[in-house]
Length: 355
Image (tube, rainbow, N blue to C red; front, side, top):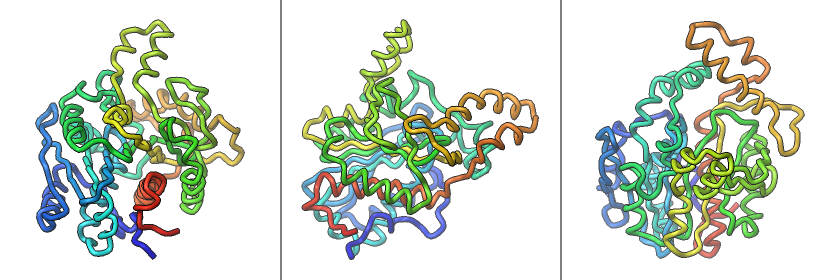
């Protein structure tokens, strides 16, 4: 049996910090200079140094980034573990390193991570998340800031551009809450990814997660593929959406997504966005294409947050949604499963895995 990427997780993973794990990542690369390179990319707006890693020597190049949204910590933790544990298991990972070259930015947004640290330390308390989660608004949202809206975008773009074109790009994301897992796929690959989709549904089910089915009918560029799958977001679609609403100022806040940027470097890359919930919303009778319980929770969130800010109880308001935290290890496995399935899709003759 070939070595699966889902093995690259510690037995009891914990959320680490961008600065706190840097020495471990840099040291791991230094021990394997023939296949790994650690590189400082440049400072964030508040002075935290972004860093990237190159792993492997293969001809097909892969870009993996996480952290574009400040309140989604699972993706960064997944890529930190990917780098450290892949190098710690170099012999088992050798087929991967020989056939592929990975360009990895474990966290694009260290300033955002710092602002969310209070609830991350209290994980998995949903009240701490609902009260203290911080997410950037349009004009500050890194995922819609490529190539140069913020310094962080510039640094990540320069790192990737120097190694493009890419065969595969993934931006690891998450949802505050959802009725299951979701995966976004760039439109040129929708008709070529049925096997990936079928396998991801099975992987999610194995972890006890249904699919979060939300047919947004093309709103903001999110086109429904099948239950649990939509197309990846596009800055141009966001701009069109807000201009149609007469909100030109908001439209101007949206630049290109990381997926658009990587696709613009040439080639025919598959682009994936993972969307895994921090908290699962239980819905025993889901409506096809419309996650009713999730949407009802979203409507309640302003009231819930206002009560939390005043020190009031919110148990009565939260009870109908039966929020259950998705364990970090579970979410990390599904992120890595999505990456593995994506790589199998673009390079079936190169990826050394078996199922």
